[in-house]
Length: 204
Image (cartoon, rainbow, N blue to C red):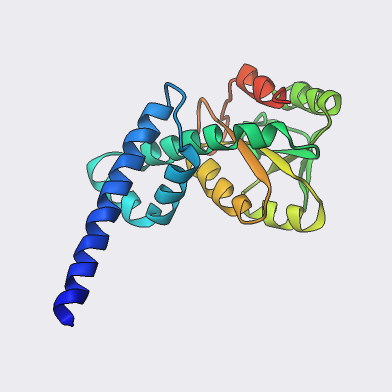
């Protein structure tokens, strides 16, 4: 009996290692080209995220793991995102100018279109394209927003860690996500390639 249980555990472990390794490989390829079964492999990496993160922390950089997971999810979500109607953009407040005059509320930074940072133009594009825009101090605010507003699509702007974290959370709510990573991350004066954001906004 115990021998059979041991064989099952060993077999399951081998399958898990093979699936995880294959998912990582597919994730790296997805950064450069189209791949199939991206959704399946993204789910595998989600399931083994914590142990994988520990391994990456020792031998590589956890940013690399988050980057390939976001890439897999973007590829997997693309066709579903095309079909979404009510969309929102969640962006980090660290992108705003250090002298930003806007006030802060429970729903985030209330941009006044002062022209000091990219949010002036992004806010204008959101009106044109039918997006709601939230400039948030942290991803924890998203839970409050999606509990009060109904969206079926969310375009996320953040560092790869936050993108992956929020994508994992919103997947459980049924909201289809698409992520655009910051080109310069950190705690303040972060940057994003605006062209990448506008291209993502035009996914219809």
